Length: 292
Image (tube, one colour):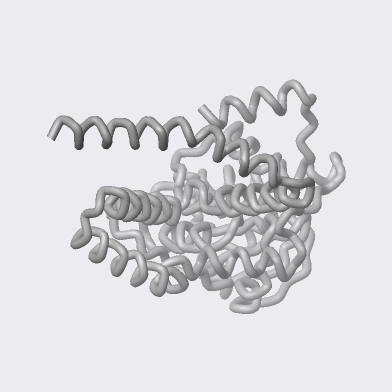
């Protein structure tokens, strides 16, 4: 028995000592193209993570990664029954992935089709950006004061032509008077959503997909659920004014933020219309803060 234990310990020690040599051997076979290949894969995975971050899909990704780790541990520990069961579950999950991640896959394919996978939204010049932000802020404040319900979709990177086609096509300059007139009670277009691209209103009376999230508060009506539903499927910023309370809300990345004041609203709108002017030092600091 002691001899067997000694031989096992010796084998374990030899395998441990062999690891650095194996690593050096692998590194010695790498060339410039291999490094470039690894960097490109890392960039693609990071862009996919950015699109999934702060959405419901990220929790599913974490669950799948957890199952994969369990499967590897079961195989390493020679737990044959558990390994067989987990491997079958993982196989079924990969078959179901196109169904589970349908909105995210659609978003990624649309980004690739439009050539926007690594691109940013087109910005307005400073004067136009300030104008649009001020008009949107004023329109929402005035509608909030008189409890006029409103639903405004601000387009970002992803095109919203499929959403705009569900409503009435418009090509009008954004203004608080124009928006208040659209959402005025009992007018033909007041129940739908307005889609804004740049400084233009491109459509009104549009239909938005409702969220399937069952954990939302019962206080949120159809207008809010439609805003969340669209924000789950694309990168648009959706602005809501409650018809019952006059509260202004913002839906983004599947989340809703309520009781938004003027300063907060402008903070949401500025990155959409204005290029961010920060130094390299500030960019590094912001990146570190985000990673914490």
